[in-house]
Image 1 (cartoon, rainbow, N blue to C red):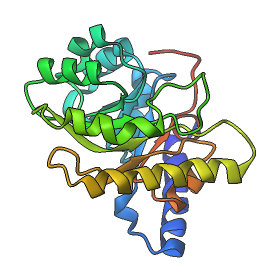
Image 2 (cartoon, rainbow, N blue to C red):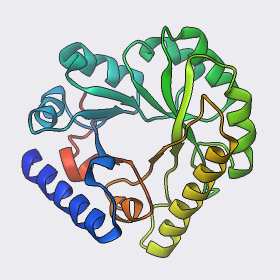
Image 3 (cartoon, one colour):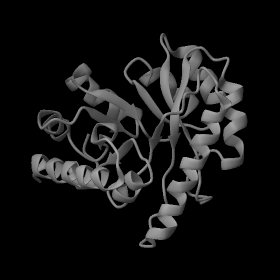
Length: 228
């Protein structure tokens, strides 16, 4: 596994897509998803220039944070149980899986500072995926506005795992439309300037459709069968 080579290849693809679509390469940030790799592999990603690390579980985040600490910008990207908020809240800068008011209220209560949150939207409607429905987005954002420690910086989604690229693209386009609707609300706590979408199999399409954060695991740091 050559993390440096993988990262260089991903950056080359980001640059090419941004040049083709008129975007700034600096607007697309890579999150190394380190759920399935060791602390050493996560450190390797930091050493080659990756700034953002993403974890799906509180145990994995806490174990890696003990070793890496503030050398990385930490993202919690997995489904978050309300009772687990207190175990990660002082370590993360971003939470990508905010999908209900009760979770926002718990984050708001436990946080000592504003937390940058992505509202997770189940655009595809798949039962296996978490997230609020597209119809709920504007209402939820409005309900969360009074919470002083919640900042809705953007929306997040996971596209279906399929070879149908047009289906994937449609999901990402729909998230972009929802982002524009939230921005139109002009809420002070919901600037919604970011889009967290795209993983190893579909990040190129996601960038074409406006992704500002892409979450890359296997194509960047590989998979060491669940080691933390």
